[in-house]
Image 1 (cartoon, helix red, strand yellow):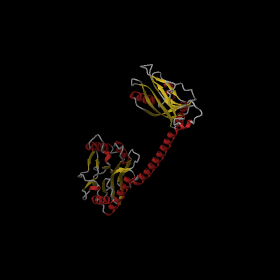
Image 2 (cartoon, helix red, strand yellow):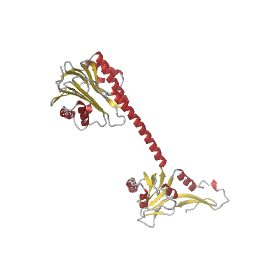
Image 3 (cartoon, one colour):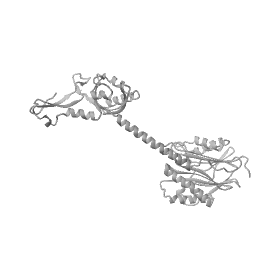
Image 4 (spheres, helix red, strand yellow):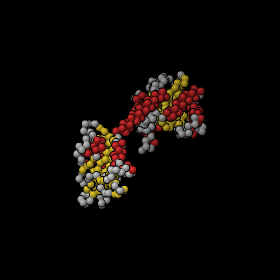
Length: 428
């Protein structure tokens, strides 16, 4: 105790803990690990509470108790660890029953956390930096609790670490709160996911119309992200007994807003095609319609095609979308159309082209993710898709769709494929 006379009859000072942290390089010197201001009185008759330091240690202990904290100190040279009564309680021990070594402490840490705890402690010691980490502990009765450890490195006279002092904080309630919020967030995510799935099934047709002489199938695969519905779509709609409207497109972005724009494009295509089934006209009207939606942050690419069963021709126009693929026997080719800008930048009606379909010929419409990968050029992607489609030419269109989606590198983007095949014995 170092006495400092503040007032006659009153002694005030700083009381050190019973142990010193030994400096292995100079055993006669050390660093005090924790010192607490205390007060005492030599004159019981005086009104001690008037002294500002009265009860400082008691107030300190009260603050530790209110925060669910206990104190500790670690002498690196001897491996001894000293805990106060509150710290022992944090680990489920009765007063004075902790073995008092660093190894004994590690044995109380949850097996899944012990290596991380050891690494954090020694990294902090070597770096001479404050320590802060969370870990689980196993009580003697088998209960699992959470502790947050905070510590400060104690340096010897030569400036090198000789130990640490710190506190252990009971964070069970914090972890319970975090878990409750996590479950709430997971529940909200599940509700959002369910709503998105319902929206997806509503907007992307699961069953395409029957069109005699042709087999038609389409598949959509969502992105591997939380808001996992994107703006990709496909559609097939019977306009007249011998005319089938076929569309595929992509609205940039994900989530409900992209899906809403996609739905508007899909339904508007049907409406415009009913009035004039010319693909270039439908696309041009779609471009004007999209401009009026005032969706500057979005971009839309699409292909609009009309399959005419009376002539077995597929006439199409495109707005910024990858070209349609034709599989004829083992040969493949892409529709010979000059690239055109997406809907928001389409200044004039785009050009059209027609593809004559022989029995067994297959048309493949797809989204851009089927031919794009970060590590390769578009030419490589187009070649890969053509080879995969040729290899699948004898598979049913539904199987072909699934396998082509398996081939693409969707990841963070959604993808869709629509396949139309003229039956090998088609009439007319």
